[in-house]
Image (cartoon, rainbow, N blue to C red; front, side):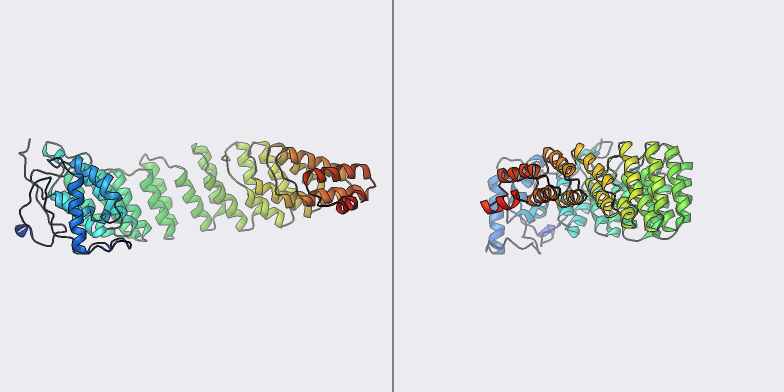
Amino acid sequence: MRRFRRPKVIPLLAEKPPSQLPHLSPIPNPSLPQPPKNPSPPSPILTLSHTQNHTHLLTFIKTHIKNPPLTPKTLLHFLKSKLHYHPTFTHLDFHVFNWASTVDSYRHDHSTFEWMVCSLANTARFSELGCLLSFIVANPCPCSDGIFSCPRTEPIFRFAISAYCRVGRLDDAVRAFDSMRKLIDGKASVVVYNILINGFVKCGEHDNALWFYERMGRDRIKGDVFTFNILISSYCRNSQFGLALELFKDMRGKGCSPNVVSFNTLIKGFFREGKFEDGVEMAYEMIEFGCEFSIVTCEILVDGLCREGRVEEACELLIDFSRKGVVPRGYDYYGLVEVLCRKGNSERALEVVDELWRMRNVPSLIACTTLVEGLRRSARIDEALEVMGRMLEVGMVPDIVTFNCLLQDLCNLGRTEEADNLRLLSSTKGLELDTTAYTILVSGYSREGKKKEGKVVVDEMLDMGFIPDLATYNRLANG
Protein backbone atom coordinates (compact mmCIF):
# COMPACT_ATOMS: atom_id res chain seq x y z
CA MET A 1 0.00 0.00 0.00
CA ARG A 2 1.21 3.50 -0.83
CA ARG A 3 2.19 5.82 1.95
CA PHE A 4 -0.28 8.57 2.72
CA ARG A 5 0.63 11.69 0.82
CA ARG A 6 -0.36 15.23 1.46
CA PRO A 7 -2.74 16.62 -1.20
CA LYS A 8 -1.15 18.89 -3.72
CA VAL A 9 -3.00 22.20 -3.48
CA ILE A 10 -3.74 24.01 -6.73
CA PRO A 11 -4.86 27.64 -6.34
CA LEU A 12 -7.92 27.35 -8.51
CA LEU A 13 -9.50 30.67 -7.67
CA ALA A 14 -7.29 32.41 -5.10
CA GLU A 15 -5.69 35.66 -6.17
CA LYS A 16 -2.51 35.10 -4.15
CA PRO A 17 -0.08 32.29 -4.87
CA PRO A 18 -0.04 29.50 -2.25
CA SER A 19 3.13 30.80 -0.64
CA GLN A 20 1.44 34.11 0.18
CA LEU A 21 -1.79 32.72 1.58
CA PRO A 22 -2.42 33.54 5.23
CA HIS A 23 -2.25 30.74 7.77
CA LEU A 24 -5.54 28.80 7.68
CA SER A 25 -7.13 28.20 11.01
CA PRO A 26 -9.20 25.02 11.47
CA ILE A 27 -12.97 24.77 11.64
CA PRO A 28 -15.05 26.30 13.19
CA ASN A 29 -13.15 29.57 12.57
CA PRO A 30 -11.65 29.17 9.10
CA SER A 31 -10.18 32.01 7.12
CA LEU A 32 -11.26 31.99 3.50
CA PRO A 33 -8.99 32.65 0.52
CA GLN A 34 -9.46 35.90 -1.34
CA PRO A 35 -12.75 36.35 -3.21
CA PRO A 36 -12.83 35.01 -6.78
CA LYS A 37 -11.51 37.37 -9.47
CA ASN A 38 -14.62 37.17 -11.68
CA PRO A 39 -17.56 36.31 -9.50
CA SER A 40 -20.98 35.77 -11.00
CA PRO A 41 -23.28 38.77 -10.54
CA PRO A 42 -25.29 38.73 -7.32
CA SER A 43 -29.05 38.57 -7.24
CA PRO A 44 -30.64 41.85 -8.49
CA ILE A 45 -32.53 42.28 -5.23
CA LEU A 46 -29.32 42.33 -3.18
CA THR A 47 -26.94 45.28 -3.04
CA LEU A 48 -24.15 43.84 -0.93
CA SER A 49 -20.68 44.90 -2.06
CA HIS A 50 -18.17 42.27 -3.12
CA THR A 51 -16.35 42.53 0.20
CA GLN A 52 -19.61 42.31 2.09
CA ASN A 53 -20.57 39.21 0.13
CA HIS A 54 -17.28 37.62 1.08
CA THR A 55 -17.80 38.42 4.75
CA HIS A 56 -21.34 37.10 4.65
CA LEU A 57 -20.10 33.91 2.98
CA LEU A 58 -17.61 33.36 5.81
CA THR A 59 -20.41 33.82 8.34
CA PHE A 60 -22.64 31.46 6.36
CA ILE A 61 -19.95 28.74 6.38
CA LYS A 62 -19.30 29.15 10.09
CA THR A 63 -23.02 28.86 10.76
CA HIS A 64 -23.50 25.60 8.92
CA ILE A 65 -20.15 23.83 9.36
CA LYS A 66 -19.74 23.79 13.13
CA ASN A 67 -18.23 20.48 14.13
CA PRO A 68 -14.55 19.92 13.33
CA PRO A 69 -12.87 18.30 11.63
CA LEU A 70 -14.09 19.11 8.13
CA THR A 71 -14.82 15.92 6.17
CA PRO A 72 -15.98 15.24 2.60
CA LYS A 73 -19.33 14.16 4.01
CA THR A 74 -19.93 17.41 5.89
CA LEU A 75 -18.68 19.51 2.98
CA LEU A 76 -20.90 17.66 0.51
CA HIS A 77 -23.92 18.14 2.75
CA PHE A 78 -23.14 21.85 2.98
CA LEU A 79 -22.71 22.22 -0.79
CA LYS A 80 -25.84 20.23 -1.67
CA SER A 81 -28.27 21.25 1.06
CA LYS A 82 -27.18 24.75 2.07
CA LEU A 83 -25.03 26.59 -0.46
CA HIS A 84 -26.77 25.23 -3.56
CA TYR A 85 -30.09 26.85 -2.62
CA HIS A 86 -28.70 30.15 -1.40
CA PRO A 87 -29.73 33.02 -3.73
CA THR A 88 -26.44 34.88 -3.31
CA PHE A 89 -23.77 32.25 -2.67
CA THR A 90 -24.76 29.38 -4.95
CA HIS A 91 -22.30 30.53 -7.65
CA LEU A 92 -19.44 30.43 -5.11
CA ASP A 93 -19.54 26.65 -4.68
CA PHE A 94 -16.25 26.18 -6.51
CA HIS A 95 -14.67 28.91 -4.42
CA VAL A 96 -15.71 27.04 -1.26
CA PHE A 97 -14.51 23.75 -2.77
CA ASN A 98 -11.08 25.29 -3.39
CA TRP A 99 -10.96 26.75 0.09
CA ALA A 100 -11.69 23.33 1.60
CA SER A 101 -8.67 21.86 -0.21
CA THR A 102 -6.43 24.23 1.79
CA VAL A 103 -7.76 23.14 5.18
CA ASP A 104 -5.24 21.11 7.19
CA SER A 105 -6.03 17.38 7.43
CA TYR A 106 -8.84 17.70 4.85
CA ARG A 107 -8.81 15.79 1.55
CA HIS A 108 -11.47 15.72 -1.16
CA ASP A 109 -12.82 12.34 -2.21
CA HIS A 110 -14.92 11.12 -5.14
CA SER A 111 -18.18 12.35 -3.60
CA THR A 112 -17.10 16.00 -3.56
CA PHE A 113 -15.34 15.63 -6.92
CA GLU A 114 -18.51 14.24 -8.48
CA TRP A 115 -20.77 16.91 -7.06
CA MET A 116 -18.45 19.68 -8.15
CA VAL A 117 -17.99 18.31 -11.69
CA CYS A 118 -21.75 18.02 -12.13
CA SER A 119 -22.33 21.53 -10.78
CA LEU A 120 -19.75 23.15 -13.04
CA ALA A 121 -20.82 21.19 -16.12
CA ASN A 122 -24.54 21.84 -15.61
CA THR A 123 -23.94 25.58 -15.23
CA ALA A 124 -21.56 25.80 -18.23
CA ARG A 125 -18.54 26.91 -16.16
CA PHE A 126 -16.13 25.09 -18.41
CA SER A 127 -12.97 27.02 -17.55
CA GLU A 128 -13.42 26.11 -13.90
CA LEU A 129 -14.27 22.55 -14.93
CA GLY A 130 -10.90 22.26 -16.67
CA CYS A 131 -9.14 23.49 -13.52
CA LEU A 132 -11.06 20.99 -11.43
CA LEU A 133 -10.13 18.06 -13.65
CA SER A 134 -6.47 19.08 -13.39
CA PHE A 135 -6.86 19.22 -9.63
CA ILE A 136 -8.32 15.69 -9.59
CA VAL A 137 -5.35 14.42 -11.62
CA ALA A 138 -2.91 16.00 -9.16
CA ASN A 139 -4.90 15.00 -6.07
CA PRO A 140 -6.70 11.70 -6.74
CA CYS A 141 -9.43 10.35 -4.52
CA PRO A 142 -8.17 8.67 -1.30
CA CYS A 143 -9.62 5.44 -2.71
CA SER A 144 -6.60 5.44 -5.04
CA ASP A 145 -4.09 5.22 -2.18
CA GLY A 146 -4.30 1.43 -2.31
CA ILE A 147 -3.56 -0.94 -5.14
CA PHE A 148 -6.56 0.01 -7.27
CA SER A 149 -7.83 3.34 -8.50
CA CYS A 150 -11.10 4.85 -7.35
CA PRO A 151 -14.00 3.17 -9.18
CA ARG A 152 -15.83 6.50 -9.48
CA THR A 153 -13.07 8.17 -11.49
CA GLU A 154 -14.36 7.13 -14.89
CA PRO A 155 -18.01 8.14 -14.23
CA ILE A 156 -16.81 11.54 -12.97
CA PHE A 157 -14.71 12.18 -16.07
CA ARG A 158 -17.40 10.70 -18.33
CA PHE A 159 -19.87 13.32 -17.15
CA ALA A 160 -17.37 16.09 -17.86
CA ILE A 161 -16.51 14.66 -21.30
CA SER A 162 -20.20 14.44 -22.18
CA ALA A 163 -20.71 18.07 -21.14
CA TYR A 164 -17.76 19.21 -23.25
CA CYS A 165 -19.08 17.31 -26.28
CA ARG A 166 -22.56 18.71 -25.82
CA VAL A 167 -21.29 22.28 -26.31
CA GLY A 168 -18.72 21.44 -28.97
CA ARG A 169 -15.57 21.79 -26.82
CA LEU A 170 -14.08 18.67 -28.33
CA ASP A 171 -10.41 19.52 -27.64
CA ASP A 172 -11.25 19.86 -23.95
CA ALA A 173 -13.14 16.56 -24.13
CA VAL A 174 -10.13 14.75 -25.59
CA ARG A 175 -7.82 16.28 -22.96
CA ALA A 176 -10.21 15.14 -20.22
CA PHE A 177 -10.24 11.66 -21.77
CA ASP A 178 -6.44 11.51 -21.78
CA SER A 179 -6.33 12.64 -18.15
CA MET A 180 -8.88 10.03 -17.17
CA ARG A 181 -6.86 7.23 -18.74
CA LYS A 182 -3.91 8.10 -16.51
CA LEU A 183 -6.02 7.61 -13.39
CA ILE A 184 -8.12 4.52 -14.07
CA ASP A 185 -7.13 0.88 -13.91
CA GLY A 186 -7.02 -0.85 -17.28
CA LYS A 187 -8.94 0.41 -20.28
CA ALA A 188 -11.68 2.97 -20.58
CA SER A 189 -15.16 1.65 -21.28
CA VAL A 190 -16.64 1.72 -24.76
CA VAL A 191 -19.26 4.18 -23.49
CA VAL A 192 -16.68 6.96 -23.14
CA TYR A 193 -15.35 6.33 -26.65
CA ASN A 194 -18.91 6.46 -27.98
CA ILE A 195 -19.52 9.81 -26.31
CA LEU A 196 -16.49 11.31 -28.00
CA ILE A 197 -17.19 9.77 -31.40
CA ASN A 198 -20.79 11.01 -31.22
CA GLY A 199 -19.51 14.45 -30.18
CA PHE A 200 -17.35 14.67 -33.30
CA VAL A 201 -20.26 13.52 -35.49
CA LYS A 202 -22.70 16.03 -33.97
CA CYS A 203 -20.24 18.83 -34.67
CA GLY A 204 -19.78 17.72 -38.27
CA GLU A 205 -16.21 16.49 -37.75
CA HIS A 206 -16.59 13.17 -39.56
CA ASP A 207 -12.85 12.66 -40.12
CA ASN A 208 -12.09 13.18 -36.44
CA ALA A 209 -14.83 10.70 -35.55
CA LEU A 210 -13.11 8.12 -37.76
CA TRP A 211 -9.74 9.03 -36.22
CA PHE A 212 -11.07 8.41 -32.74
CA TYR A 213 -12.68 5.15 -33.86
CA GLU A 214 -9.28 4.03 -35.17
CA ARG A 215 -7.75 5.03 -31.86
CA MET A 216 -10.39 2.90 -30.17
CA GLY A 217 -9.16 -0.06 -32.20
CA ARG A 218 -5.54 0.64 -31.30
CA ASP A 219 -6.57 0.71 -27.65
CA ARG A 220 -8.09 -2.76 -28.18
CA ILE A 221 -11.60 -1.62 -27.31
CA LYS A 222 -14.31 -3.51 -29.15
CA GLY A 223 -17.05 -1.30 -30.55
CA ASP A 224 -20.67 -2.02 -29.67
CA VAL A 225 -23.87 -1.46 -31.62
CA PHE A 226 -23.96 2.21 -30.57
CA THR A 227 -20.46 2.78 -31.95
CA PHE A 228 -21.41 1.39 -35.34
CA ASN A 229 -24.77 3.19 -35.42
CA ILE A 230 -23.08 6.53 -34.79
CA LEU A 231 -20.57 5.97 -37.60
CA ILE A 232 -23.15 4.57 -40.04
CA SER A 233 -25.27 7.68 -39.46
CA SER A 234 -22.22 9.88 -39.97
CA TYR A 235 -21.37 8.20 -43.28
CA CYS A 236 -24.96 8.72 -44.47
CA ARG A 237 -24.93 12.38 -43.47
CA ASN A 238 -21.72 12.89 -45.43
CA SER A 239 -23.11 11.26 -48.59
CA GLN A 240 -20.90 8.20 -48.22
CA PHE A 241 -23.66 5.62 -48.23
CA GLY A 242 -21.47 2.93 -49.78
CA LEU A 243 -19.06 3.15 -46.85
CA ALA A 244 -22.03 3.00 -44.47
CA LEU A 245 -23.08 -0.30 -46.04
CA GLU A 246 -19.53 -1.63 -45.77
CA LEU A 247 -19.42 -0.71 -42.09
CA PHE A 248 -22.78 -2.43 -41.59
CA LYS A 249 -21.37 -5.63 -43.10
CA ASP A 250 -18.19 -5.23 -41.03
CA MET A 251 -20.34 -4.79 -37.94
CA ARG A 252 -22.03 -8.15 -38.47
CA GLY A 253 -18.71 -9.75 -39.36
CA LYS A 254 -17.31 -8.67 -36.00
CA GLY A 255 -20.15 -10.36 -34.16
CA CYS A 256 -22.05 -7.20 -33.32
CA SER A 257 -25.77 -7.62 -34.00
CA PRO A 258 -27.50 -4.60 -35.56
CA ASN A 259 -30.56 -3.17 -33.87
CA VAL A 260 -33.57 -1.25 -35.12
CA VAL A 261 -31.58 2.00 -35.28
CA SER A 262 -29.00 0.36 -37.56
CA PHE A 263 -31.67 -0.79 -40.00
CA ASN A 264 -33.62 2.49 -39.83
CA THR A 265 -30.51 4.49 -40.66
CA LEU A 266 -29.73 2.35 -43.70
CA ILE A 267 -33.35 2.31 -44.94
CA LYS A 268 -33.40 6.09 -44.71
CA GLY A 269 -30.06 6.17 -46.54
CA PHE A 270 -31.43 4.00 -49.36
CA PHE A 271 -34.43 6.28 -49.72
CA ARG A 272 -32.22 9.36 -49.73
CA GLU A 273 -30.25 7.77 -52.56
CA GLY A 274 -33.47 7.04 -54.46
CA LYS A 275 -33.02 3.29 -54.05
CA PHE A 276 -36.52 2.54 -52.79
CA GLU A 277 -36.54 -1.16 -53.72
CA ASP A 278 -33.31 -1.69 -51.77
CA GLY A 279 -34.78 0.16 -48.80
CA VAL A 280 -37.88 -2.03 -48.81
CA GLU A 281 -35.71 -5.13 -49.19
CA MET A 282 -33.72 -4.02 -46.15
CA ALA A 283 -37.00 -3.84 -44.20
CA TYR A 284 -37.82 -7.44 -45.11
CA GLU A 285 -34.27 -8.46 -44.17
CA MET A 286 -34.97 -6.80 -40.84
CA ILE A 287 -38.00 -9.07 -40.37
CA GLU A 288 -35.97 -12.18 -41.24
CA PHE A 289 -33.27 -11.10 -38.80
CA GLY A 290 -35.88 -10.99 -36.04
CA CYS A 291 -35.50 -7.27 -35.37
CA GLU A 292 -38.81 -5.65 -34.42
CA PHE A 293 -40.04 -2.60 -36.31
CA SER A 294 -40.28 0.69 -34.49
CA ILE A 295 -42.75 3.46 -35.25
CA VAL A 296 -39.88 5.29 -36.94
CA THR A 297 -39.31 2.32 -39.27
CA CYS A 298 -42.86 2.54 -40.60
CA GLU A 299 -42.71 6.32 -40.88
CA ILE A 300 -39.50 6.15 -42.94
CA LEU A 301 -40.97 3.57 -45.31
CA VAL A 302 -44.56 4.79 -45.72
CA ASP A 303 -43.90 8.54 -45.63
CA GLY A 304 -40.86 8.13 -47.88
CA LEU A 305 -42.86 6.28 -50.56
CA CYS A 306 -45.74 8.75 -50.32
CA ARG A 307 -43.43 11.73 -50.81
CA GLU A 308 -42.25 10.17 -54.05
CA GLY A 309 -45.82 9.60 -55.27
CA ARG A 310 -45.61 5.84 -54.73
CA VAL A 311 -48.76 5.79 -52.62
CA GLU A 312 -50.10 2.44 -53.83
CA GLU A 313 -46.76 0.78 -53.00
CA ALA A 314 -46.98 2.26 -49.52
CA CYS A 315 -50.51 0.83 -49.11
CA GLU A 316 -49.49 -2.66 -50.21
CA LEU A 317 -46.37 -2.58 -48.05
CA LEU A 318 -48.24 -1.50 -44.92
CA ILE A 319 -50.99 -4.09 -45.44
CA ASP A 320 -48.37 -6.81 -45.91
CA PHE A 321 -46.55 -5.71 -42.76
CA SER A 322 -49.86 -5.77 -40.88
CA ARG A 323 -50.59 -9.32 -42.03
CA LYS A 324 -47.13 -10.39 -40.92
CA GLY A 325 -47.85 -8.85 -37.51
CA VAL A 326 -44.84 -6.53 -37.51
CA VAL A 327 -46.59 -3.13 -37.46
CA PRO A 328 -45.80 -1.66 -34.04
CA ARG A 329 -48.58 -0.68 -31.68
CA GLY A 330 -49.10 3.05 -31.68
CA TYR A 331 -48.08 3.61 -35.29
CA ASP A 332 -50.32 6.34 -36.72
CA TYR A 333 -50.98 5.86 -40.44
CA TYR A 334 -52.85 9.15 -40.67
CA GLY A 335 -50.37 10.42 -43.25
CA LEU A 336 -51.23 7.64 -45.69
CA VAL A 337 -55.00 8.10 -45.16
CA GLU A 338 -54.67 11.84 -45.68
CA VAL A 339 -52.75 11.45 -48.96
CA LEU A 340 -55.30 8.95 -50.30
CA CYS A 341 -58.29 11.11 -49.36
CA ARG A 342 -56.65 14.24 -50.74
CA LYS A 343 -56.21 12.45 -54.07
CA GLY A 344 -59.88 11.44 -54.03
CA ASN A 345 -59.15 7.78 -53.36
CA SER A 346 -61.13 7.42 -50.14
CA GLU A 347 -62.19 3.92 -51.14
CA ARG A 348 -58.58 2.71 -50.99
CA ALA A 349 -58.09 4.59 -47.73
CA LEU A 350 -61.06 2.70 -46.29
CA GLU A 351 -59.58 -0.63 -47.42
CA VAL A 352 -56.28 0.16 -45.73
CA VAL A 353 -57.96 1.24 -42.49
CA ASP A 354 -60.25 -1.81 -42.48
CA GLU A 355 -57.32 -4.18 -43.03
CA LEU A 356 -55.15 -2.67 -40.33
CA TRP A 357 -58.03 -2.27 -37.89
CA ARG A 358 -58.94 -5.93 -38.41
CA MET A 359 -55.36 -6.83 -37.43
CA ARG A 360 -55.75 -4.70 -34.25
CA ASN A 361 -53.70 -1.80 -35.56
CA VAL A 362 -56.30 0.72 -34.42
CA PRO A 363 -56.18 4.02 -36.35
CA SER A 364 -55.86 7.31 -34.53
CA LEU A 365 -58.74 9.70 -34.02
CA ILE A 366 -57.38 12.11 -36.61
CA ALA A 367 -56.95 9.29 -39.15
CA CYS A 368 -60.58 8.22 -38.67
CA THR A 369 -61.83 11.80 -38.85
CA THR A 370 -59.87 12.36 -42.06
CA LEU A 371 -61.33 9.17 -43.52
CA VAL A 372 -64.90 10.20 -42.65
CA GLU A 373 -64.36 13.58 -44.31
CA GLY A 374 -62.86 11.91 -47.38
CA LEU A 375 -65.78 9.51 -47.69
CA ARG A 376 -68.26 12.36 -47.33
CA ARG A 377 -66.58 14.34 -50.09
CA SER A 378 -66.79 11.25 -52.30
CA ALA A 379 -70.52 10.94 -51.48
CA ARG A 380 -69.89 7.59 -49.78
CA ILE A 381 -72.21 8.34 -46.88
CA ASP A 382 -72.92 4.72 -45.93
CA GLU A 383 -69.21 3.99 -45.50
CA ALA A 384 -68.74 7.24 -43.57
CA LEU A 385 -71.61 6.31 -41.26
CA GLU A 386 -70.10 2.87 -40.72
CA VAL A 387 -66.71 4.33 -39.80
CA MET A 388 -68.33 6.85 -37.44
CA GLY A 389 -70.30 4.11 -35.72
CA ARG A 390 -67.19 1.98 -35.36
CA MET A 391 -65.34 4.90 -33.84
CA LEU A 392 -68.05 5.45 -31.25
CA GLU A 393 -68.23 1.75 -30.40
CA VAL A 394 -64.55 1.72 -29.39
CA GLY A 395 -64.90 4.96 -27.42
CA MET A 396 -63.28 7.18 -30.04
CA VAL A 397 -65.19 10.49 -29.78
CA PRO A 398 -65.17 12.57 -32.99
CA ASP A 399 -65.06 16.34 -33.14
CA ILE A 400 -68.47 18.01 -33.22
CA VAL A 401 -67.94 19.67 -36.61
CA THR A 402 -67.32 16.39 -38.46
CA PHE A 403 -70.18 14.76 -36.58
CA ASN A 404 -72.63 17.52 -37.46
CA CYS A 405 -71.60 17.41 -41.11
CA LEU A 406 -72.40 13.71 -41.25
CA LEU A 407 -75.76 14.32 -39.56
CA GLN A 408 -76.52 16.95 -42.20
CA ASP A 409 -75.59 14.58 -45.02
CA LEU A 410 -77.93 11.89 -43.66
CA CYS A 411 -80.80 14.34 -43.20
CA ASN A 412 -80.30 15.69 -46.72
CA LEU A 413 -80.77 12.14 -47.98
CA GLY A 414 -84.01 11.74 -46.02
CA ARG A 415 -82.37 9.50 -43.44
CA THR A 416 -83.05 11.62 -40.38
CA GLU A 417 -84.00 8.63 -38.24
CA GLU A 418 -80.55 7.08 -38.85
CA ALA A 419 -78.97 10.42 -37.97
CA ASP A 420 -81.00 10.54 -34.76
CA ASN A 421 -79.89 7.01 -33.83
CA LEU A 422 -76.30 8.10 -34.38
CA ARG A 423 -76.94 11.08 -32.13
CA LEU A 424 -78.27 8.82 -29.36
CA LEU A 425 -75.25 6.52 -29.66
CA SER A 426 -72.78 9.41 -29.56
CA SER A 427 -74.37 10.92 -26.45
CA THR A 428 -73.80 7.66 -24.57
CA LYS A 429 -70.12 7.68 -25.62
CA GLY A 430 -69.32 11.12 -24.25
CA LEU A 431 -69.85 13.42 -27.24
CA GLU A 432 -71.23 16.76 -26.10
CA LEU A 433 -73.82 17.79 -28.68
CA ASP A 434 -74.47 21.43 -29.48
CA THR A 435 -77.46 23.40 -30.72
CA THR A 436 -76.45 22.83 -34.33
CA ALA A 437 -76.77 19.04 -34.03
CA TYR A 438 -80.29 19.26 -32.62
CA THR A 439 -81.37 21.89 -35.15
CA ILE A 440 -80.17 19.68 -38.03
CA LEU A 441 -82.30 16.81 -36.73
CA VAL A 442 -85.39 18.98 -36.16
CA SER A 443 -85.11 20.37 -39.68
CA GLY A 444 -84.66 16.88 -41.08
CA TYR A 445 -87.74 15.50 -39.37
CA SER A 446 -89.70 18.59 -40.49
CA ARG A 447 -88.78 18.05 -44.14
CA GLU A 448 -89.83 14.41 -43.87
CA GLY A 449 -93.13 15.39 -42.26
CA LYS A 450 -92.34 13.58 -39.01
CA LYS A 451 -93.47 16.28 -36.59
CA LYS A 452 -93.94 13.88 -33.69
CA GLU A 453 -90.29 12.73 -33.80
CA GLY A 454 -89.20 16.33 -34.32
CA LYS A 455 -91.08 17.48 -31.23
CA VAL A 456 -89.30 14.83 -29.14
CA VAL A 457 -85.97 16.34 -30.21
CA VAL A 458 -87.26 19.86 -29.52
CA ASP A 459 -88.35 18.86 -26.00
CA GLU A 460 -84.90 17.40 -25.40
CA MET A 461 -83.38 20.68 -26.58
CA LEU A 462 -85.55 22.48 -24.04
CA ASP A 463 -84.34 20.17 -21.26
CA MET A 464 -80.73 20.79 -22.33
CA GLY A 465 -81.18 24.55 -22.13
CA PHE A 466 -80.67 25.12 -25.86
CA ILE A 467 -83.99 26.99 -26.32
CA PRO A 468 -83.84 30.52 -24.90
CA ASP A 469 -87.53 31.49 -25.10
CA LEU A 470 -91.06 30.38 -25.96
CA ALA A 471 -90.98 31.91 -29.45
CA THR A 472 -87.95 29.80 -30.38
CA TYR A 473 -89.65 26.70 -28.97
CA ASN A 474 -92.80 27.30 -31.00
CA ARG A 475 -90.82 27.98 -34.17
CA LEU A 476 -88.88 24.73 -33.82
CA ALA A 477 -91.91 22.69 -32.77
CA ASN A 478 -93.85 23.93 -35.81
CA GLY A 479 -90.96 23.04 -38.14
